[in-house]
Image (cartoon, rainbow, N blue to C red; front, side):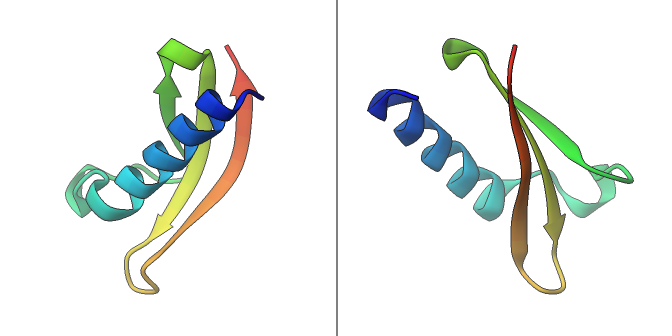
Length: 61
């Protein structure tokens, strides 16, 4: 993974943790976010009560 892609991943995770979808829009199970410019799909889970975001997987698309 290039440093540019890694930085984009870090920015995306920070954004998802801080400003992810509203609770009423959350689906059951892992959520997905695509970084199309870098060809990656992130699978993650948010726990609002614990204020955590867990990265479950990163896949090439």
